[in-house]
Image (cartoon, rainbow, N blue to C red; front, side):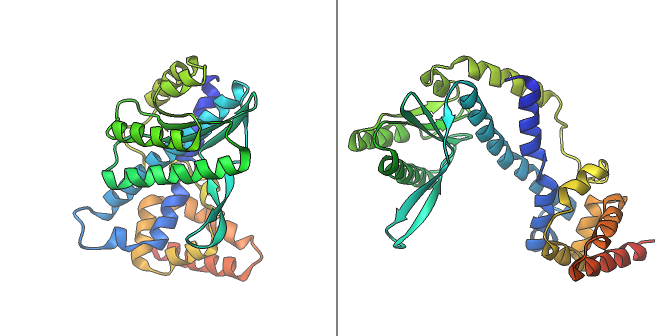
Amino acid sequence: MDYQTFNEIFNRFVFGTSKAKLLENIAENPERYLGIFRPTKPKTKLLQNLLTSHEIKFGDAFECLIEQYLKEHNFSPLSKKIPYYNKNKEKRESLELDQLAKKDNTYYFIEQKMRDDHDSAKKRGQIDNFERKLEALIHRYGENIQGYFYFIDEGLNKNQNYYKEELQKLSVDYGVPLSLCYGKELFENLNIPQVWDEILNHLARWREILPDLPSLNFDENPLESFREIKDLAPSVYRKLLDNDGIFNLVLILFPEQKVLKMLVEHFRQQNKTIYQQLALKLEEKLLSLR
């Protein structure tokens, strides 16, 4: 994979929806930013939320990246949704897999996480979840499966012994080879070890262009910000505009009101009544700031 493709994947996942997500969080949970029982001011809390979003989306970017690498090396990705019968709820559901691909009549199932650093309560749930997915896969595709419980960051292996032991039990009971992998080990098992070195090189290059902290001024790139947030649900915008305290948070993110003015015009161009109301409300808010 060339660096340009890598860069596009990571920028799209990590930064491509973070502004819209932050506005949704403000609309749904304003007390997290406005409450008095916090050691942080609203602007600091907004930054904290943005950083957390980037961390989560970083994991999503790796999910997309690994799928692309599997495709490049002649693995055929399959649907990640697997039907599952939930006995407790007595109904059919679907399980979402991180990776599922086929090569030479073997199915490759990968459950991937960023790092192995969670507490003991969570690790049990991780194995239970893995077993549910394995059971559903065997029911659908048979036992010609290779399963991998994979942690991308090889520097953290807090629960390594526990996972090894539990995966060994599952492997014996289900008759399927299962492996615990950290970092490069997954790609060595898949006979594509060179992929890991390429990932590390591209990642180091990508990190060089990252700012020390993300900017909270969404007016810096107004067109980019507008495109990202313009299609948020009207209900989100109603909540952002109907409360002065919440709207003050919005003004932290749009200090020059460039994007907000673009939104007024965008709302006016929509046919539905709700958008005309949003245009009026936002315009009134902006006029009151003059």
